[in-house]
Length: 313
Image (cartoon, rainbow, N blue to C red; front, side, top):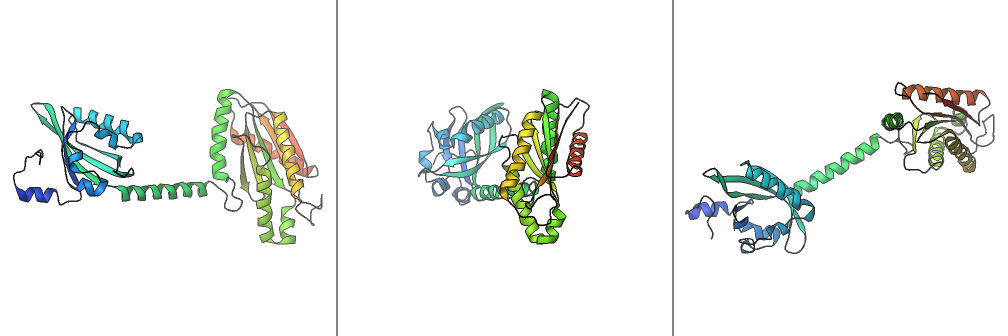
């Protein structure tokens, strides 16, 4: 067996070293080739220890997406004489990949790097657990930003999107439009049909309104109760009016009965539609309040309609 860095002469030491799950190895710095790999490597990756020793293409046994970073990181750390760790996916003999953690110790002689020694650890189970936890975290984030009843974005997500798009509009000096939509006589709807039907109604309205615009930046959220909001970046007044008209049209096409409505036998919505090119001192909340006043005006003027406004920055 080629010498391990400590050059063990004891059979007991060798047996101990090669009986652990960790896989010992040694790389000669001048040639950047393995001079030793523990026999445990074959059980994990399928490669025999001899297939590693002396070859120049062992880097090819890393996943292509991990290779450049890991090699650059390890070389940089080794040149600095710093012990380090690196995680990567190692190629198995049958073409699969296993997550490996290399724990690396730098051996120096007369101030120069002579060799690298270390252990490989199988961390595939740990990585699988991490991936699962990341997926759960992503799902939790999605849940935390979506309305539990309708499935569209909630007020928390709205705040983030509006803050981002408002700042972008201030930088670009392009118009941003808001549409506030409120279901007409929704309390009477609940009184007539019950809260279960009311929840189903909110879902149908959310689905219908979601179809009113389809640009990637267009964003709809449930404000709460029976109120919804559209954030329309880079949208002038004329384009916002088109979206508002589409909202009204889609709600009409849904034909949701509403016996207690005072404006129609079908469910309707009132809209406030505002457009603004925000100045540097303008506040998004003030804009929302102005559009909310337009919504109030639409309801005051008979509902089942929209009121429009353009505001200075």
